[in-house]
Length: 490
Ligand code: AHR
Image (cartoon, rainbow, N blue to C red; front, side, top):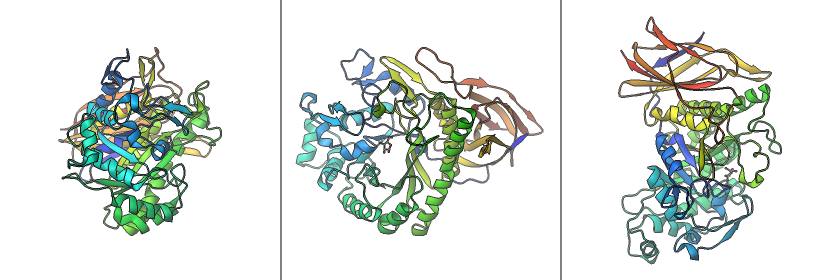
């Protein structure tokens, strides 16, 4: 029997809604076809945005969306994507698949998309191949109400009011595709670029510096030492790759060992966050600077027959468990991790949505976002799990992973049974109160199960395999599942 102990009295802080954020890049079929089809498309759309996709993102309360990249961000020149469509510059997206980028989705379209979804925009600007003036004028174009030539262009392009975008990323992966910089050099560049990103009116920018790749602790050290005072947050990128980068492994065909290896590797996020925060704490003891994991998720081999530069992969229950493990880790660090953005929203890597023509599939990962949405901006409840390890060889991890929060006196417990074959009997004690009414939802399947076009195997179902005994909630979870239990206090 596994045990979960909830301490509603011990709170680490609020679980920032932005931990359940998204990332959409000009990559493969993420923006084009996946989100934006243009006003004249036969696919139902509002101002060119797919209605089905926008509705699905609204349903999971997508709180924030990062754009335009990724590596594309440091090749993107915003002025190419404004003004009359027919006059927009064409370029070849050399980073992703060598396809023509016609810039039909630009600043106005992105901000229209965010307004349709009801989420905050997070714009990642170009440091690698851009200029300070370009970044500075992008901020001005979007946020200023002043009587300037730059703002006048916005009016001429049909937008009177400033958008007041708060989240600005200053470069992406500048240790790699964003310019192959050394941390000392990037730290200096960051200081210069952010200087000319001005606050307009009451809109105070939230300046985000490019952080480390995985375990590059030196990058964090140098950035915090040389530029920590000039940033509001530092980013971290970590992808779960089952095997080697050259041959990462299939998204849908994997052995039992690879199943556990993937889950084990996703749990490495905890160590990464802990160690990067320890470094940040030395330079920022008052915790002013937040950590943002603005790229995370599984990275498998592309689906056979698809463009290798499009990073299109299917999404199984294994990916859903990666999402649950990762969210629970974020919740455990909610006092310092302020945002996270899964890579990526539609048709790329660990997507929540897949599209094919006018069809749309909600992946198992999508349903995990749905199960976790009650945690958004809720008070984190200390959640202690005691469970046996499961796994194969050295890929062992606790059978149960969980997180809890409280809102308006109602506790939400999200928990996953990662065993691929064994039920989990869990006894939940809540210190200081007894459970009253409980309502459950579950996503359950077999590790290899996925949703395909015209074949929906996985969806959220009501869950009621629990009972209250001696003030304890006894839950019986099937193998390979993620569940949400909403517990009212008696
Ligand atoms: O998400 C795909 C790519 O992964 C992004 O463009 C880049 O930032 C990262 O290397």
